[in-house]
Amino acid sequence: MVTESPLRIVHCFRSPVGGIFRHVRDLASAQFAAGHQIGIICDSSTGGVYEDQLFDSIRDKLALGVHRIAMQRHVGPGDILAGIKTYKIIKKLRPDILHGHGAKGGVYSRIFGTVLRVSRSRVARFYSPHGGSLHFGKDELEGKLVFAAERMMEPFTDTIIFVSQYEHDSYVQKIGQPKCASVVIYNGLTDTDFEKVGASADAADFLYVGMMRDLKGPDMFIRAIAEAEPLTGRKLSAILVGDGADKQRYISLTEELGMADRVKFRDPMPVRQAFRLGQTVVVPSRAEAMPYIVLETLAAAKPLLATRVGGIPEILGENPATLVAPTVKALAEKMAEIASDPVAYRGKMPDHEDIRRRFGVAAMAEAVDDVYRTALRR
Image 1 (tube, rainbow, N blue to C red):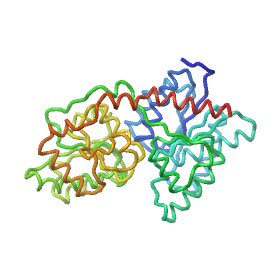
Image 2 (cartoon, one colour; image 1 turned 45 degrees about the vertical axis):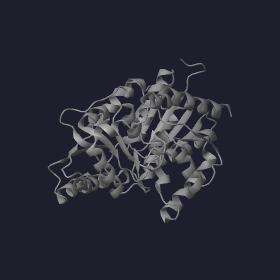
Image 3 (cartoon, rainbow, N blue to C red; image 1 turned 30 degrees about the horizontal axis):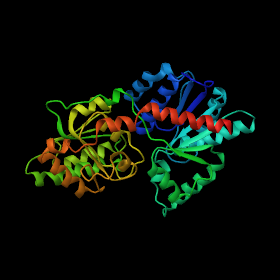
Image 4 (tube, rainbow, N blue to C red; image 1 turned 90 degrees about the vertical axis):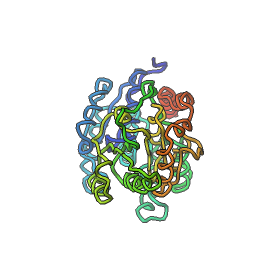
């Protein structure tokens, strides 16, 4: 129940897949329950049937609607037309809050929110990087250009909302201390997410769930299985669930390694359905901010192996039993250990109730609402 007047909130982001989309869906649902009016603006060329179903599941909570237009991933001429269309939608929706997620959503929300403020509209502008531009290297030419653009956007930002302390620290290290307000608010899960999920009788040894792109490490996952097999003295099975431009390359990799008979691929599906397909979930990412898949796995009480990158240690702590370096060798050695005694490994997982207490969606939504209200009062 809202204690202050309800807000008109518009979330803007590019790609309706993966962690950003999950974050927005959860946040929008909680904001709807609090009495706010919510709208979404995102790309129309990304996602498929599964993502359409996810939109349908929250459509009745979005009083301001779902607006999908073509947004290209990289900066280019197409951004001009996409920007014009986005601005017209935002202007028509008359938001109190413009919350941009990811690099492109952050640019659109802050620029167009500023234009509306010039015309005396009451709107506050927020930006959540979700990794995004922070994955670039500080010494790369493209990174330098992106970080310069991020710095230029700060005067048009009321608050940057980071999803992990690591993301905040990366911003400071690569761009500098924010010259606008900033805060760290962890991602949160619903009560349903904390219902435990077991594995099916024919579950594979290992499971990958996520986008099919090198940043997330599917290639390292596949190669690690190949290297782990000689260490265990038996063949290992695995399933990869997800989609992306590089999926066919990973399928070809399993064929090259002679593993196509035991490393299988599945299209995107609800994560809790996917959890039944594997015994141990592996998150082999090369970089992350605060990945939902780690939270979802622990909430479902599934055994987890993850790389020590980004905000993942903030969830798991520096637990050597569950974290390894983001290398094929480190993954392979730990996967061999797990395959040799999966029951013992399960006993090394973090306390289930502690995860519930630290990463609930209600706490996330309440903290975000406080940030919104503070900015509007300013």
